[in-house]
Image 1 (tube, rainbow, N blue to C red):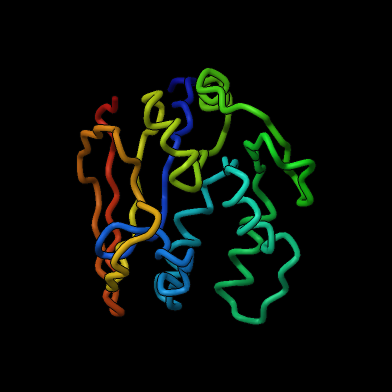
Image 2 (image 1 turned 90 degrees about the vertical axis):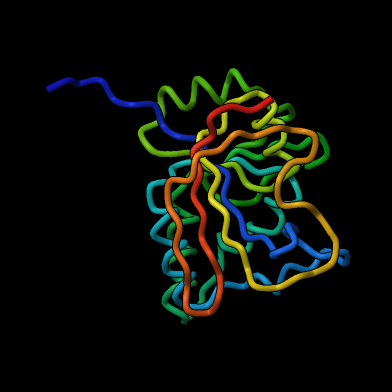
Length: 191
C-alpha cells in the first residue's frame, strides 16, 4: 500500500433557483432554505470539509453559525460542522474576523490555495460566486455541487460565474421529495 495521499478537493457548493440565481434582486435567499431531508444531506456533504473560503459578504452571512444554538437537530449539527472547520476570509474592507478558527486574508492567491490543497487532510469549500469566480478563472476548482431549488426568482445574483467557461462531467444526481435536485459535477477545465 502507498502512503501517498490524494490532494484535497476544492469544491464550490451552493443552492440556486431554477433560473440560476443564488439570491433574488432584493438580496433574499430565504426561498432556498433547505427542508429536513436536504439539510441532513448537506450536513453529510460538508462533514469532509476542513476549510471554508469566503468573501466578506458570505462570511458575514455565515458567521451566525459560530454562536447559534438551535434546537432543530439538522441545524444544530450544521453549526457543529461549521465550528469544527477552519475559515479563510478574503476581504480588503473587513477590519477583523469574529469567529473561531478564522483568519483574514486581503488577496485571493490561487497558488496558496493549490498549496493548501496539497497539504490539507480534508476538502476545501469555496463559498459564494464572487470569490468562486477567481478560483474558476485560476482553474483550481475540482467540483461543483449545485442544489437546484424549485423556484424561479426572475433575477438577482447569478449562482455560477459569468464570463468563465466550465466543462463539467456529471458525477451524481439526487432528487429530493420537496423538489430540490442535487447535481455534483467534476470540473474538467475552466478558462
